[in-house]
Length: 544
Ligand SMILES: Cc1cc2nc3c(=O)[nH]c(=O)nc-3n(C[C@H](O)[C@H](O)[C@H](O)COP(=O)(O)OP(=O)(O)OC[C@H]3O[C@@H](n4cnc5c(N)ncnc54)[C@H](O)[C@@H]3O)c2cc1C
Image (cartoon, rainbow, N blue to C red; front, side):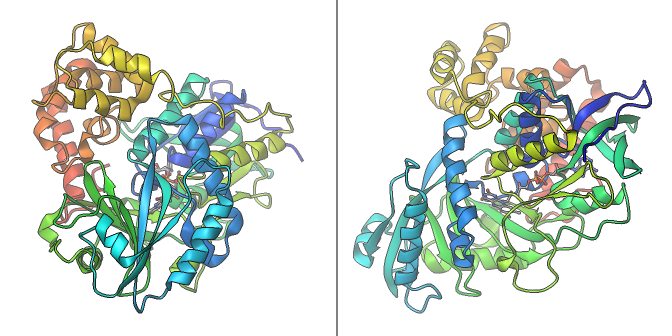
């Protein structure tokens, strides 16, 4: 049956598809829908990529671990998508070599790891990444001298990929959606969804910065609110049983330590046999994750002292000269995996496959997304838009997201040439801009050369023009948006704190903020950054 909703109220804009949530899944669905000609709106209560998508391990991976649970189609899909993302976003998605040290007494002996590796290679056939290698203990120690030697039996090495700035991947999907005509509404929370006669229609929203109320309607509504999926359904109806059973995963971020590895490590924890990662990332090390059932508000999730201790002691065990303590942790973050609700059983055994659920019993045009990974968002989006086409009763054009580069995914060499014209920008700065904005950094060069030529920092790595670009062309509304999800300086060891005042000055000039607003923005930014510090105690939800 097809949906026949149309706008009953002429003052209320009507869309073919409304996507709730601008995490990786919502932004991906909006891009796909807009590229296929659907009149699209995407509604996000906060900034783009301010939920789970930012708090992940940032791997674009086949999910070696899913082989243990025989999720072969998921591994195959992930490996396929890994290749696609390398093609459409070469500036953001980079190959990553990963080591698996195998110690005596480990839950997974060498033969099992080898079998996993062979299967991974087989499923990766034609995917352009080198195959795995098995190394004896001595050969491996030569490559990674900081690793614990006692009990080391062998090691496996393989390739996956990494998206250092997941925030930018999500943003670029949103920018592509907007370029294809989508209406992007950030800082607008879905507060009510009207359901009548088996169809969802009117959506009421609240502007979370001003408190203004707005309304719109859509023929298909896609609830891509990640760990908030049940909360969004709750504003529509009480008739849908719980869908999400979130588990919390935490990471710690530390600097280079004694014996730190050259490549990433995938390690079996001694305490509970769970695998976790130590990943060279953004000039630092990203260590995680944990997997703990969670029932609180996703916005309040933070790494507990126990989780930090667990990750630190397991890292120190494998890199004995590291001697890490909580004092070495620059900051932490925690996210809630939007996994399907399952009352019992181990967290790690909950399927990582995504589910696209049409709520036909309640409203046949209301769709929820459950699960999904950064890695597979593009394919999920394709499937979700195909489903939307069926609900609309329309034959949609073919999906183009797999072979259309993301906005920064082309023109990199021209952009490099343009950036080299900026005297204040160091060589390191040129590389930094390209790794964040890709080919779009050409537009930043234009702003710089048109009257904003200075760098923000002494090393000439960050340009003032980036702040203007974030506000003019990247939907940034707050200082935290600019620092943490546009310029990416918020992910540095000091969270970019030395630059906050200068960024605030430029943003105030650009956005027309008065002194009071500038001060409020700085305070909110510091509160945001503090929330990620291990010693901070306050929840974030009070501030956003
Ligand atoms: C610890 C951890 C590690 C992970 N590691 C990896 C990895 O290495 N590789 C990988 O591929 N995947 C990984 N994942 C999985 C992946 O990050 C997530 O599954 C994915 O990001 C979910 O994206 P999403 O868009 O569904 O949700 P989110 O990113 O949470 O987006 C949902 C959005 O909906 C918005 N929203 C909520 N309610 C409303 C409302 N009422 N109105 C408007 N907007 C609303 C939220 O503000 C939020 O921005 C990891 C996950 C975790 C937690």
